[in-house]
Structure formats: structure tokens, C-alpha cells
Length: 304
Image 1 (cartoon, rainbow, N blue to C red):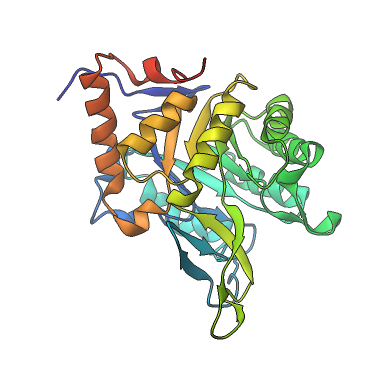
Image 2: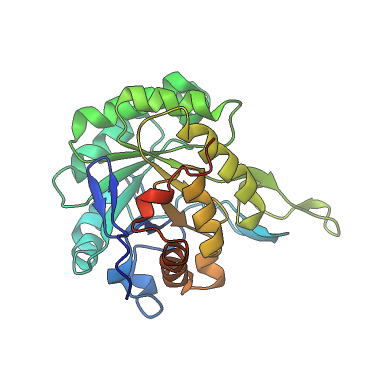
């Protein structure tokens, strides 16, 4: 065991190391206990949680693509009350920080979720602003600075928990959204969420997904994600959690060098359920081999 310091301070949210798992790819954590030493993870962003239970979209809702996958799950989850009563008590037996990803159709939904989770004992909230605002014709909250900021402000009024705002890449200027949520009071920014994509079955001559379009994730989106982390790191002062196509330790280090203070592993968990432990070990090896004493020393090193 090396003496490298892997601890991460995300604006007061203390993690044992920079490796987290992305919402929607790791269940609520326990689903992976046979493959991963959950106590070694920095944090788990649990499956997207809504006020009421959701069945999700019709199937098929997952499709493989070149170097990635499309998903249109539709936020299937048992709802926040079930989570608080039945799931959270189980996750508390582990050392990882439980971060709850919250989603809503209105600003009021987000505020109510924050209120319910405020004193639950979770470590932080991750605000998914890629959801459609039903009061604005279905336009995603995260596509306009003012709407994104409005969600963060509403959540901040209901809780003192650390807030992580997850940015959508489906925008013209990612830095404008990042600056808006920073001004609105987010403590941390996570990026990127999935890119909007589509696949068509040429034999059936129709979209593969029942929802027609879905979120593209996996290695195919990594260059876009690294670029956006690099840009946002220079535009804001709050810490960043980088994600998007991370499949190995080299990918993770790339995000750290681009300015991410921590990283999150998503689609790769489906391919290799042990990948988070491999990436954690690989980051430590990189630091040792290059003479660094802490992970903080390499954050943003590629920014010139």
C-alpha cells in the first residue's frame, strides 16, 4: 500500500478517494456488492429518484452502438419515500458517501425532493437538470442558464446538504450553464450527462428505441466530455466531477488532468462490474509512478 493521499474535498463534501459511480449505472449500490468492495468507493450516485414511483418508458429502451450505448429508461424508480424507508437504511452500512440524484418535471418537484431528503443522512444531492420542464413546453431545465439556475436556487432554499448540479452536454455553451448554476449556489458541478442520440433498424426501417431517441453514453462520448470538463474548469471555481466514457484508469487520469477533482464511472460498470476497483488502483499506481503525493496535485495539470 502506498502513502499517496487519495482524499478529495469537494467544497466540504469529503470523499476517501476520487472514484464515484454514475447515477443509473450502479443501482443503489448494493446490487454490486458481489463484485466490488463498496467500502472502497468514494461515493455512489444512486439511481435517479423522483417524488413518485415511475415505471419508465416502453421497451425496447436500451440499444448498443459503436463504442457506446443508447438508453431511454425514463427514470424508472420506486420514488423517494420508498428510497428513504427501504433502501437508504441498507446503504448506510457501507463507508461510501450516498449521493441522491434527484429529477423533476417542475421546479417545485425538485424543491420537495430536497426537503424530503434534507435530514435523511445522505451525503449530498445531485441535481439532474436534463429533465423536461413541463411548464416550459418540455424544454430541459439544463439547456438555458436561467432555468438551470432556478432549479438550483429552489433546491438550495430547502436544504443545507452539498449540492452537485449535473450538466447536460446538449447545449450551445456549456460554460454559460456552469457559471449560472455556480452563481445560483451549487457546491459542485458534475458533467457530462448523456448526449442525445438515435439508432434506426434498417431492416424494420424504424427507430430501435420505443422512445425513438435516447441518451448516448460510453467510450464514444469521452472526447466530448473531456473537452467540456476542460472548458468548465476554467470558467468556474467550484469543484468538478468528470464523467462520460471512462472505461479504465487512463481515462480517469485524463479527466483529472483536464480539471476534474473526482470522476464518475457509468456505462463501463455494465461491461465490467469490477471496473471501479481497477480504476481506483490504476489512479494510485499513476500517482506513485509519477512521483505525486496526492491526487490533488494532478487536478487541472493539463490546463495551460
